[in-house]
Image 1 (cartoon, rainbow, N blue to C red):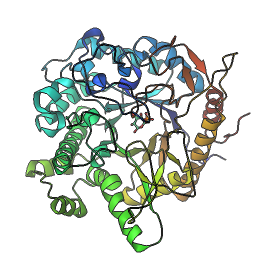
Image 2 (cartoon, protein in one colour; image 1 turned 90 degrees about the horizontal axis):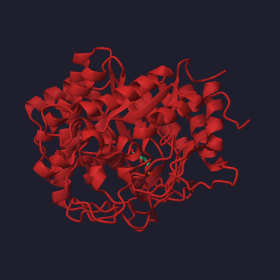
Image 3 (tube, rainbow, N blue to C red; image 1 turned 180 degrees about the vertical axis):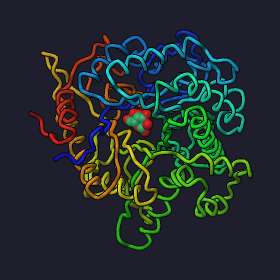
Image 4 (cartoon, rainbow, N blue to C red; image 1 turned 60 degrees about the horizontal axis):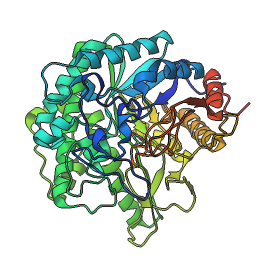
Length: 483
Ligand code: BGP
């Protein structure tokens, strides 16, 4: 007997700039993602506002979904996908973000994609902004640090809501909006930081903190206004938020560690969800801003907008958990955005992310207790290197194990009483890594022949996990074994 509801949305997740390529085709303008070079775990990606001869910009071709979408969607359908999470590339629609009229060619591309999905009965789940910002807005007014970004965003939202209101029901405003609560971001926040790298270890300064929380506030207001706008265009639209949930345990039961974990959890994981689900800043956030000397101009109009634009459902990415300790001498580990203290009870991936399936059950319960909103896990997965055998097969049992263990825990969370209505593991087809820009950090059920230097035929191959996931979907989550 399955714990997953009838109609549970099984699928996969992607983002335009990591997938589409065709970065300057058919009138598309450059975004922050298009000026980021590739990097590795050891050497961070570089921001080069003017493109450099000979440098590798992975978003420019990515896996060329722009020209392969029909075949790729056919493979998703073969696995039995009920939902496909993708993002719209803002600069296909508004090339600099500043225009007053949209680019028709860009709009047409997504018409084709949505029609193709519809052909197979796959629901699109659209992220409006996934880790990119039009470069035009960065150059003109330093991106999201300026309130002008809100109007640009709403113009873009109005265009896509009106155009796709009958093709797309499920929307998400900003991918991992709380990324800005963890660190400055050129990619999603669209503003310059002095060292122009994506090095997540860089020192924090008060000036940068001021910038990122200002940008975050502007995005929270923009998100709320977008929710209201979407509902006014079509009341049937379901619009959610998207949080990068870095579940944080106290390193020990020492009350100092417990307090430390609570403080971190509030700012990193809860602040944005609280604003987006409850419609106002929580007291701890206001006090935190005051204590840190961060001035956020929360106008009466902003307060009204936040109240009126609460989300219909809550979604999040879950890859790993971390620990918090009051002791500065504890051993640190890596992660997608945040670094934390190493947990001795769990394993790490090759890229140093701590693998914790039970943490997913804990997290679903924590979120549901807090908001009582329907939830969807819109990213989860293992970034790993794959080996292609001579016969073209790829035996990625490690990926199957990771996903299986997480699905099992999601089942238990549903047993606990959580309302979960969908699951879209990250990078269902191999794509460019957001943090390192690599291709060899693969998440997909579908292998794409391309290496870190951008070379390869782009040929698609089915991994063992492809056949496994097909069985999972067929059995609505009952059969998690490889048969
Ligand atoms: C999330 C992002 C995605 C994605 C994923 C995996 O934080 O929303 O865009 O890339 O992490 O991270 P990475 O690609 O760095 O392995």
